[in-house]
Image 1: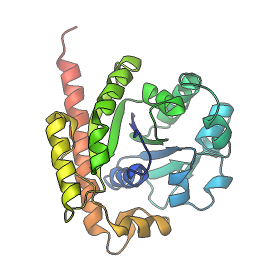
Image 2: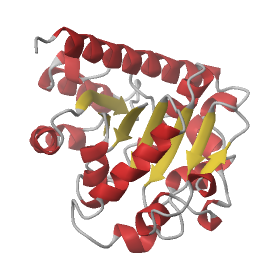
Image 3: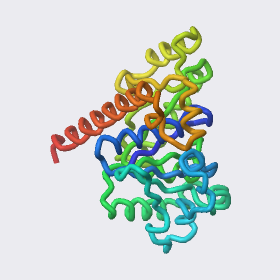
Length: 264
């Protein structure tokens, strides 16, 4: 199983939209996929199931690792797609403990998930590279960083790179797959200019070629509790996430090949 954390320095960058729809793209491609809501706000759960606040979830496991996985995993209509909600203990657990205080239990959670033979586990984390989010990244195999295509996003690049260096120290095997531009508005000069500047600032391999556009279709999909591709007019948006999935798989395949050919 490959575990991928999806994290950002700040909220409101389209992180949950990316998490839900990328997970759905993996599942549609035939990979057994689990989407974990590790954001105390419960954004994934609230988007996909209105009863998410009543479900046991990720933070309940952190509070009590004896909870069986059968109580946490929620199937969806798509056989290859399941999710774990944030859980009822999310408010308490997220606000208690510094980075590292939940590390052992996050790793135990991922071991339990892996034992159920999932191919991909995507983890939507809380904004900010600290606390439980830090523990998730310290436990995951790979990391995707959504970055809004706006001037403020450009100003935060030095801090982003500094944070990445710190994360690599915490988790030397972490595969930073790259930054994914989100909320890109092709008809808005400040948005396209911000995207262009970011492409110049970051190394080419650090930036996904696929960018997620700003589109009201994502709001409609969330309101209906569906990934965007399930909507009748969601085919175009679905193609965007299929492209992102292909990039992620290519990056994962490349890193595995490089690891294989390294001398002992």
